[in-house]
Image (cartoon, rainbow, N blue to C red; front, top):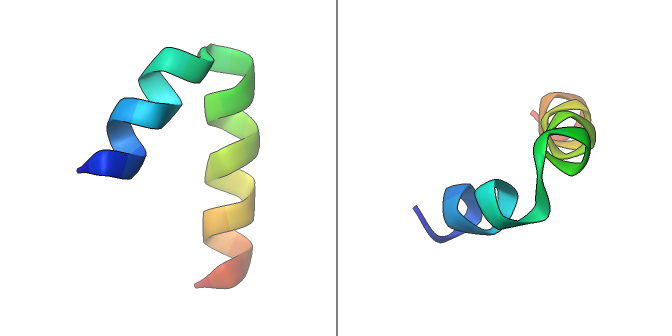
Length: 26
């Protein structure tokens, strides 16, 4: 949940990058 809030504050661009990193990690 905390990560989602961080991503929301970061913005769409950052959120997309975070998603890529998360997908790569998983």
